[in-house]
Image 1 (cartoon, one colour):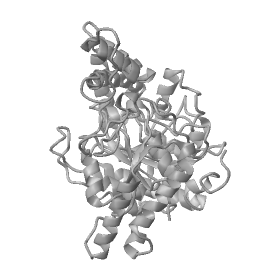
Image 2 (tube, helix red, strand yellow):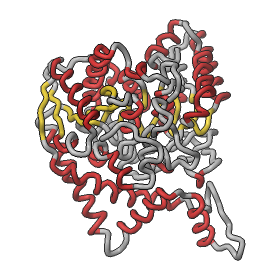
Image 3 (cartoon, one colour):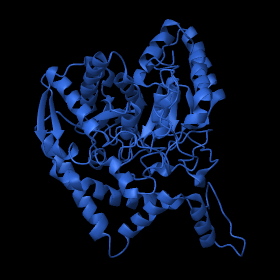
Image 4 (cartoon, helix red, strand yellow):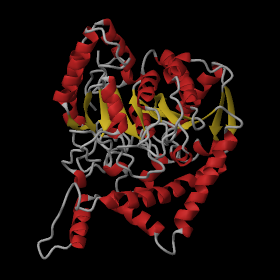
Length: 499
């Protein structure tokens, strides 16, 4: 049962094939069996999850009308606050902190009756592309335990890919939902900025952060997206738009006449040959199904990475100023005549990891007097140019396409000491965050070494339905070609020996 899609699990619950309590217990048993090796979860909430499941079973037995996903378990990235459950953002500075309130999206999960299995591992404060900067140890890729699961949301992607959870919540600031999806063979969606409330997300970069679904199928992402989306008065950047029919779009599986733009700047140098090959094969499938492939240029995308790594650290340096040892979380008190300043210094020095310190320093420098215009101001101008590139492209096509990540999953430790090489993993995903546009990543096939690659589609802001239409269609085409889901091809996930 745990290997079925979330939609299939929901149907089994409605049909009485299994109870919500049994389904939740099955996932908790799976976590107990494999997570000691994966480290996808930082915290599990067994009692609460089972209590939610029993409540769903009782309400269903009483004939109450329930949400379609009621009783289907979910995991939540540890950057999303959860009342009564620890929330650490993968950092020692928040070790043991239990929030007194729920994020808006968590309130929606609880109201719909989804048992929350626990909190997933992540790069510290979402700063990383490999889940190696977590203060609680790295997460491992379920396809190969010696490789990274992507980042910053590698815990959510690994949990879903390893059948520990059918659904998970991630956050995407520069690709942290989509890039882990690509390297774990799962589906990840970054919604339009403002379409899912950010209230209750521990902010890294407020103009870039966006929560979204992590699943094994496009339809599952659509169902979870519909649940967590919607206007929120507690989030000043929340859009008032009604939630679209994403699941209906995913089930349409029709791309006849759809114009798909291939971004020249995101498929050439720097992208591994096997990643490009799977990307081209996916486009060929869509073209045979009736889509029109259009090659176009987004000339300012080549500057997006540099602009992002000025804007994001600048916002992070401001957002992380609250972690000072005074109000909550870790407090380190020096022995000799401590002052407020010395406590802050000692706490931040001990509580933050190297990558967080690096980005705070970079951001503070970019915002400092005399450098603001040269760095942060210039980066914002590039952001405007990237947005104009998107606008011009969407006048010609309905969606844009590129490989999600330049390579398949690399080995643990391979890039941790080379920040520039690590940052390059986000080269294809960052433009969408700068522009606020939605994006989806789904599997495009296996590379020569048997590891998954991903394809990314981008749509105009507020046109998330297009992602589900093209994603659902390609997923069906590729599964027909593969003879089933890509995850079934992973030796470890299929029950074979771990690499």
